[in-house]
Length: 198
Length: 198
DNA sequence: CCATGTTTTGACAGTAACCCTCAGTTTCTA
DNA sequence: TAGAAACTGAGGGTTACTGTCAAAACATGG
Image (tube, rainbow over all chains, first blue to last red; front, side, top):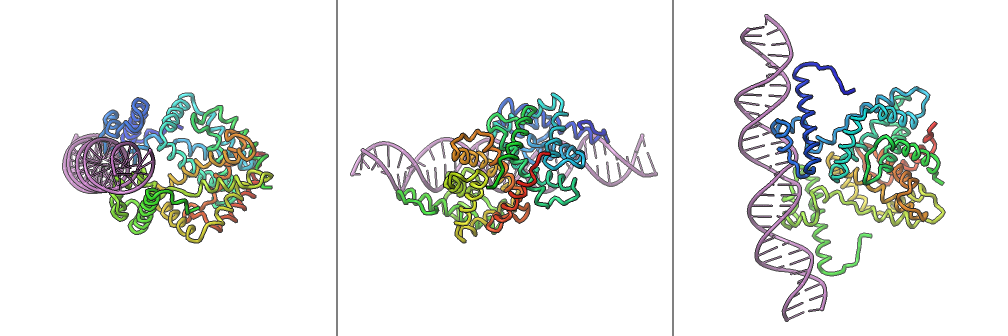
């Protein structure tokens, strides 16, 4: 999932530059804080010009906000067997992706999350990113059943799932990781039993 | 809900200034677009200095993002009779607030929403604001039952409700208004019937 | 190996949001 | 009515972000 075809020399260099910028940015954010770190500093540390920074990342926020796992989760959901109902397909898809992460990837993810939590501005954008995932998930679930993503049923299920994930992520210490899966399952059971209109 | 006690002269003048800034900002956003409108223009139109603008609103975004209805909804939920289950209390609380809005208030709300939709930056912040409402709703629901807002049950219900609201708000044309209530009820029924784990 | 076109890059300048300080004025309180 | 406290206006400084343009690095056909 990480290794891709080397394609051309140009592509490889680009990927390298991109990684260098992100790595140095994360380090500087941790050392000095997000606000105190200027784009110029990141650019200098990564040995590129500030304008190059903005060619790779449209905003300073994006250098840390970019999430690589969304497309992978979509794939995993698509791979669930046909009989599995939507909610279960969602849950199992997420589970399979997260369980496949290496310890290194978890560590990197935790670093990101820790920086998010400390900076309200970033937290806000991360949340809105999560909300946008509703569309994607609804589309994937609908497709599995030969329907379109406009179908209210799939939008509702995807929305509820995303809502629950956000709700059970503890406000302060939140880093969605392995142990949190048990809580998600518990939450879904609670929802199943308590979501009664009358 | 709009009229408050005049308190002192100072308070009244402050409220007036605040309203003037918001009104002129909305007008300019509609006329020239959000990005093309500078804070200086808004300040001049409202006849205050730019620094005064920032004393009333921490950022340019906040001038349009501020939502007056959250505390009102909380009140309405609190006012639901004791026997009513959480999901219904939520729904009925929202209904009572929205039905009480005057046509003028709906019009103003629609203006806000229309500007949101056009500007991705604002949409993002509006969403994250909605997500933050989960905490508030969970707390209110829990309190009704003599529990604390940490209780997973209430967090899950509030999260699912907020997720569903966001999911059924159509991506493009969205302005959450009167007719959308029927859709919310429909969505909740769908969730009730289809949220089965196996 | 070289000539061609495409992509990436860095320097520079400009705009606008945002923050701070310092007077001067207005409003509240005793 | 005097002093305290808050509000206001002006100006300056920092930084994120955009655009242009020429130079350099790379890919490709002969």
